[in-house]
Image (cartoon, rainbow, N blue to C red; front, side, top):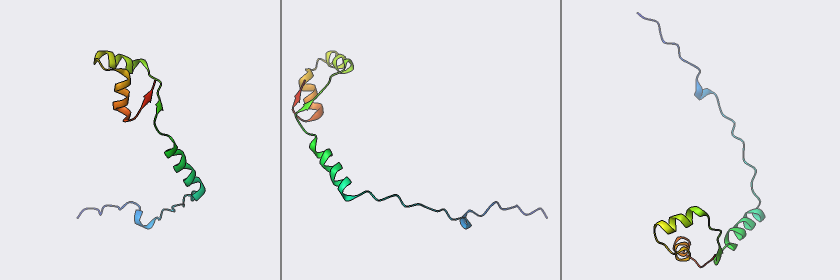
Length: 76
């Protein structure tokens, strides 16, 4: 007969202590939602050279391409 395999530490016996995250106040959550919804069209866009080069290569109009991308009015 062979040796019995030694079993490692029993992980089920060790309990993890999970700390509660501090709750975020309602006032803070409300303020974040207001800020998220306050951003809207017409968007002011800064155009980089990558977008300009892509537009030239694919023969796209810059303003029309941005309007198609953002689904809103754009001022360059």
